[in-house]
Length: 205
Image 1 (cartoon, rainbow, N blue to C red):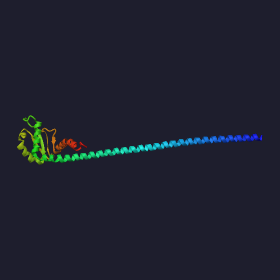
Image 2 (cartoon, rainbow, N blue to C red):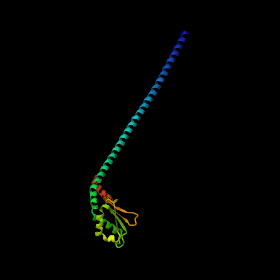
Image 3 (cartoon, one colour):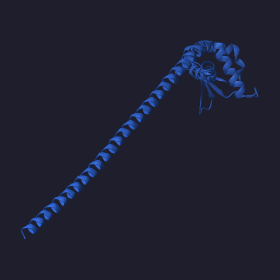
Image 4 (cartoon, one colour):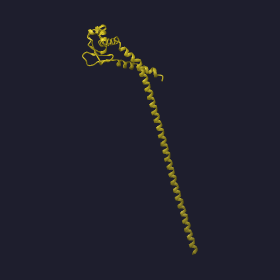
């Protein structure tokens, strides 16, 4: 009886220890699995963070490079425009201002405009010309001498302090005046000169 009790006790103990060992192994395996999963998840998250950071850095580099290139192109364009403007000013401005100081030059332009405005030539000239007040004496004398025929046909000559250079011309009855000032001619010649000047300076660049 004593022997059987001892055997039963040992069996129960042995089975309990075995079961406990199995349970411990199971818990250990589960813990290891969870730890591996957590490590793998952490690695993926770390890789994603690094990848995102690298992408952000690349995007920032590309954007900075694009902005730098754009700024460089703008600076180069501005410099080219200033060079063209300077050459235009040096080439055109003195010539225009010098030309409009010549009373005969202005009178020739006016005669050309009047003839083209009134191509028949023998009709009355119903036009009014506005000239600089500070050139009144020169123009009055010159027109009386050189363009008396136009004056006799009705060309009206007026003077104004508002006109600083060149002249304005339009119908006597009013409505509008066409300006032929120094600035108008200067802008016209600059517009004419600019494309050719740009081609000469930068076509081969």
